[in-house]
Length: 184
Image 1: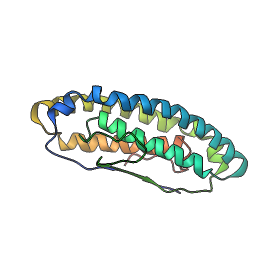
Image 2: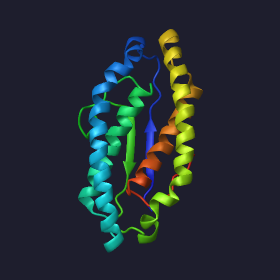
Image 3: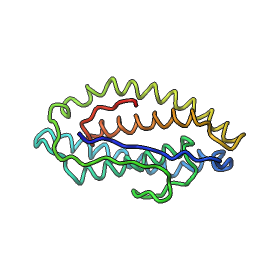
């Protein structure tokens, strides 16, 4: 089973100005990633039928969905106050301290893919509650960075775990992997 790896390097001190205006800086990325998310959803639906009938993943659809997930990760973690470098407007990262990887695995389990939405419900609920907690912590981090110029390490570590889980969940629901997401 393909494993999803996601990490962000902790940096200190942080830019107060960049974090103070982060929501405005992130808007162009969020718009593009939102549109690409719909395209990736359509690719996942096509991939679902391909897996259901052949038991194999289509490499081109997988690569597209993987690249969209990578860009989504960079955009959302930038918005979430995890780093200061402005994300690249492309599928490739430039100077962002974000590391994302997942290995392509051609074979796929037809049964787990056929019932993916049903089996994803518990993970979806966990993801929902973690997103609420992450939003609260992100607001606290925003104030901490704005006033002190540093992000508390404990809050950074919690948010990193939430983003890791979210990445694993999105890879699972997007049919990039058959590995069920775990909160580690």
